[in-house]
Image (cartoon, rainbow, N blue to C red; front, side, top):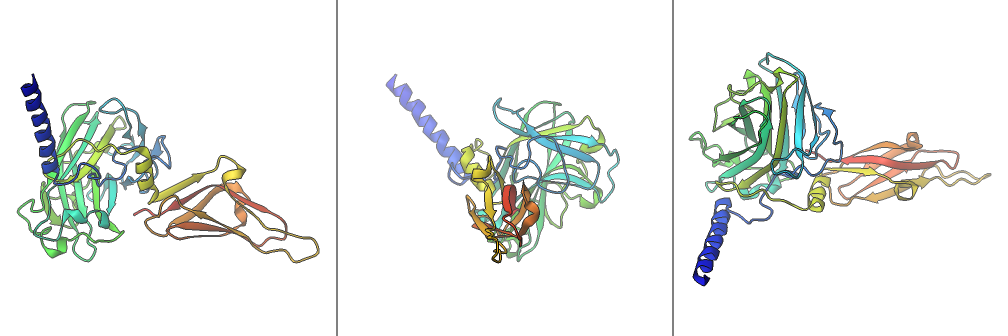
Length: 362
């Protein structure tokens, strides 16, 4: 019994070492996709029309210039517990013109991708994995866009097939730096900018016109998101699309999805977008302008707020609701904090900002 147990333990250790070798990196912090588990939804969780902005799930943006679709949070999950992103076609277009498109986009900072070693002869294999399901079967594409920075922009696209309607299927795509017998990524122009700007864009495509078609499983210049085999998911308002557990990691083989604590994932998301909603006057951004009869009033007052995490860049501040929002004179910000200033007033008018946002997305 002892020998059998030792052999079993050795097999378990060997298996774990094989996984580490396949991923070419540590078992923690290996997923470069932020919010790949779709835990954080600071903007909205209910069905919202896609409009070339971030508007529901954190860190995923939706682009379209044809048809219409909504996105929302769903508890339909391939493993029975967790969230998925659901898209639903709401306006059909049965014929996609050459310049039309609709897709999901996830942007990753260049400084988070330096271990890919793009732009060198040591560039790494990278594996993308995710779960997907739809009522519409057929060939879809996912693409990787290596942003130009100081080099050149290159795009890679790979087909995947949804084989069975309304059934969760796991997909794994390994992107080699020389896919298509190219040397774009291993040459200096293939380097990912080591900055807080866009490094790589990851897309999942719904409908792509012929102006944006390229070869399967190869690196090319330009922005060819899909192959000519890409289905037109927008051809019926009956069409839905679910995606979950999105992971991209160094290595030629996918590992189990990296589950991160909600607090960790939320902090990562708040680097790009922070939404404040007060539960009452005592915890909102509140200030008032002191005024004494018979003496000149103070013409303004201000209050500062420190963000929970350092933001990617100086965010755009937007005051949404609160008392006397119209008196807001200036909303300034840095990566660390924001300051709200009240406009000139001749009375003791309070300014209470109980809903506001800070946006530093890429």
